[in-house]
Image (cartoon, rainbow, N blue to C red; front, side, top):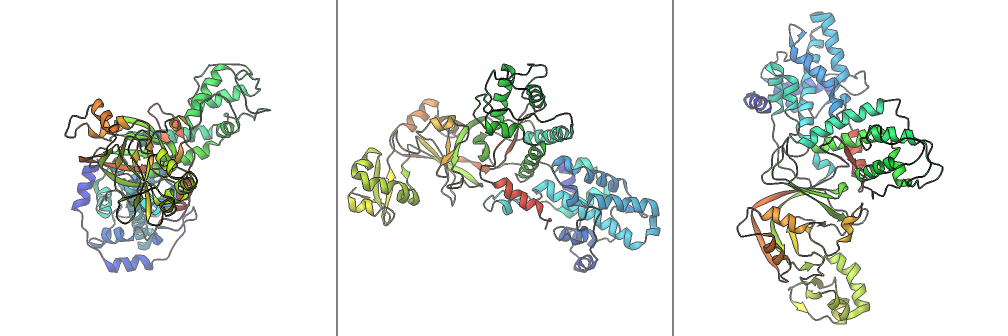
Length: 542
């Protein structure tokens, strides 16, 4: 398992041989049967390859020109990496299989160069596989510059040396994968959706003559729609019949709509129809991208993690994360507006709470939104909304005169007093960051019932702030009962509560979210970040 393989990696030689690096770079580039550059152009693997073969130039994967059991197991594993959402071409899977076939036919008569090339090519593929499973095929910081996960060090050369010598290739590589139940659910979902994509009997239903399609309406392709909904687990086999959009179909469409982040009204309008007929191939790609993002996560956490998945508009609070772990608390959230004030993808550490907070209005909001209204409504507008003005330089309160209102953003800033109308509600959860983004309560409760919840200026509003406070404070000093939390949230005076045990906070992005029952939530790419990751994955690994 992983600890055994990592121990082998720790003990392995680590000498770097510059001469061997020169030899590798000088080897002519080849092209595999898939048309991608062979291992000799893989600069990302070169440092580990140098270390691997510096101390002992003898082949790692061959004995007397014959591939070892580990070599054959590695080639079999490479041929199946698509089951994990990885691309076989990134590991020259076809080229490595062809190399082994040639050695099986020709043995040492193939020549010393062929033997050396095969051994190094297998090592290069294994090095890249270790990186892809442990850290992801794309560096998380390339996709999101501020996604700073704790450093996860692994001696790739040492791991591969142990793998080639005595390793159980499949088991040892599997031990590098994220040890989280949702990751395994996604792997299973990927297999299921690939099976659905290959099922030629799952014909797509034809578009109804008119949309929207409402309960009880006639629909000649109702049976094809039933088959599709059975296939994606929103309808039980045998429920409903006939050429009518009947009650069984309506209930199934409601489940489908909930899974796809829509308002579950059971009416098939253009938006629901577009999702119903979306090709399985697109859903497969969403799963593959989510698997890549899972591999960025650290394998363990310094504290109890809190995750916010932006496309899902959902927060998850965990007491621990592992193969059998489910969230201790889950709640709806409101995030930043798409195309205007997006919530960034980043990591932080929640170190304190503020009950009954002031809202220090960001300068941009003060200038764009509050100053024009205050210029029209004067001091009465500010008082009605519990706003006060303060000097930017000293922080001292200044009078709400017309002159000071005109200076908002130019030496004067806006604060909102604690209270029932405060935009941050009764509590904010602070994880200091350069974006000035945090989690907070809100008096605007109705937005949590919307299906798509990108309405904020960038911060994350939480549907159950008292519940999140109870989760965060349950082992902290003080008697933080529900009544005590409510009293602090409604006190009308600011109170800061430091946390003895900080919580890591991950603002993440995944448009395919697995569930324990085997179904998958497929969500809109609300910020267009899936498209950006697609571009990065399409590049040759570096």
